[in-house]
Image (cartoon, rainbow, N blue to C red; front, side, top):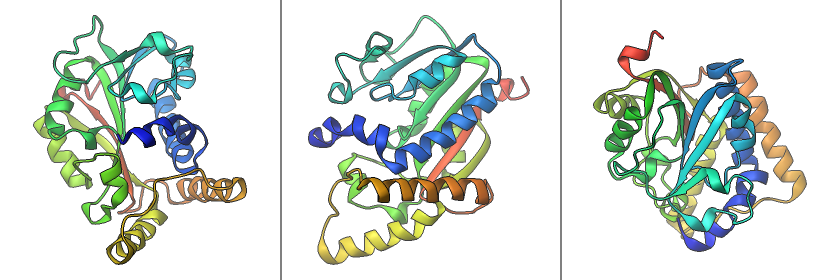
Length: 243
């Protein structure tokens, strides 16, 4: 991640309308997957500054892996739960997990299949991987360069990556449908006038209005739309899908 952008990441992750809307969608799915459990073990890969840890801890034990120390707060109450290191095959924890989160993480791996394959080895038999990724290569903008992405995915592409990693996609659906058109406009504008500036938290009224648009879209459109600027998926090992 760009160093200057990394230092603003916590503020964006807490206040920016896009992160709030994405985390709402993720939180609903976590609650559906874990239900009333209070003994679940959760691993958040690429957890940033542990913004979701207070919510995830309701279901049991939570810990994280974060490769970029610039996004971490030294005084965070969750700092001791985060390993600052790359997520690769040298990461071998002493437990297996009921839920692994990879929220806008997979696109940062040049070999996403390998990253998913290793994540699969850390799951309990009945465990699940819940991930979000940016969708559709035609929506590639300076934002992807700034965040050092290698990929954007369609459902079909993500299915293929999961299958190559020994996983099955149980469910997948697109998010941020209205942003699909907005990203196309942003890409066209960049062709004419150059890179867009990095994200900032908009003024309060606009920030709240955009968040409400996303929340309403999620309620109304649900999981039926065939496009969006992001993709969310639930994966499992084939032998754990029926568990």
